Length: 435
Image 1: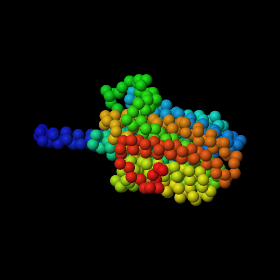
Image 2: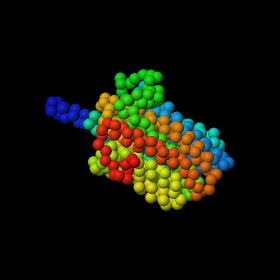
Image 3: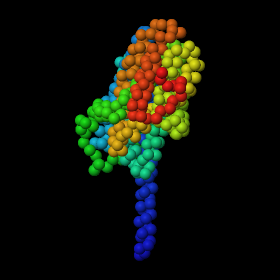
Image 4: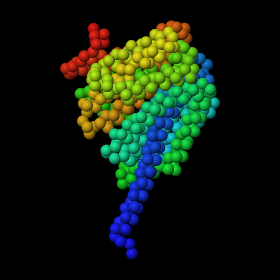
């Protein structure tokens, strides 16, 4: 007969094995979450240097190419905006695992449809599917929250943010290099990666949301405009919300026509655009992951916001005026403060918000950014289409970048007014001070 001590050892050993198995499953689940986030951004990035040029195979003129690409980009953004809260609500009802597997498999289907597209209508079908399925960020975040403890939750979300950023950095570079070989190749690679991740999730990943914690789907949960209404009802920080909107719209304006603008003005192909966008992503990552803390410590959030908005005015206007491709790289690497302006503004808005409302606030800001992805491409591509007939050295070709600069100027003026009206101590070098 076993002694009580021996029986306790057996029980402890069984618990230890069960804990190890559970920890292994948690790690597999979290790897799947990171892969979902990374592949979502990688997929978006893969298409950036190639899709605008692929549209040219189905239209007869540069202005038609520009306009149709703008509508394609807006279709993707609209589906993402509408489906993001919907997928989150569905995951609350049926669980996170099936929604993420569905989204990853859907992204793979989007890549295949785009690669095989025999007409412009098929490209639209691919964007429709891709936009709906790339809205899985909210579900991935919810899964990570389910499997993490309160103590390591911040670290968990930090890793998700890193996966998001890495996908944004690698996507355009990989898409540009592959697109330099064949316009369809980036989409085949994306399909293989997504299908592989979906199979991994189906085999190895367990559900994170217990049955007793699931909730029903309500209209309020799936309404993408509800959070925006709540955001703009904030009278205390209303001007800063408008500033953030100007910042978001300006960024999407220049991002949505970057490839076609550089193609028309400098003759850049997928490879050249991929390298340039990689430099943009790396510079932003270096600032936000490495230099931001020091910038905030030296200048403070208010000054970083104002200086960043002002330098973005100069950089956007400069990209519209430059006459040589190498000058674009000088402007990219000169835009350090602009990459810090967004996080600094978010920090200020967050400090003005009750701790219990932080999640709602960040979700609302994300909805605002998603809305910019819908509207901004339509505006920027329309502007570019109206000037494509002009000579390459004509300054008017930079019209979309001038509009982005004007939006930044409006944002800077409103931010200055907001901080000055509240007696916030502001010191900005004389060259940056308003006359």
